[in-house]
Length: 69
Image 1: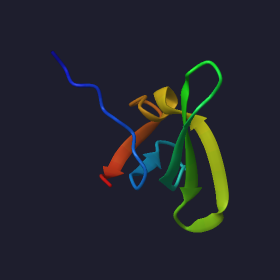
Image 2: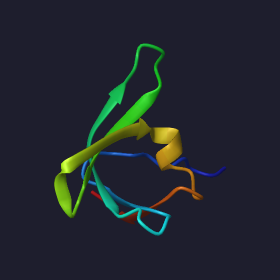
Image 3: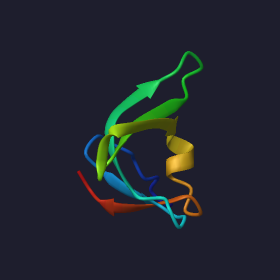
Image 4: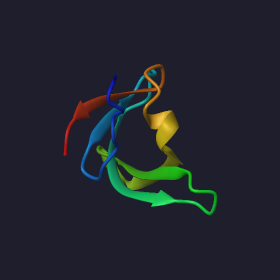
């Protein structure tokens, strides 16, 4: 059985696009439906934040894990 990856605060992900950049997970939250979302901060511009679903972050076509927390 394959173990599912877990997204936790402190991990850094790289967006797989030409202008994607590196993103630090600063918080994990659940919405009213129970879906987990990661609040992220761009490593080269700490004022740039984004929130996206953990399932999007774990999509190997969208992001790759760079460092563990």
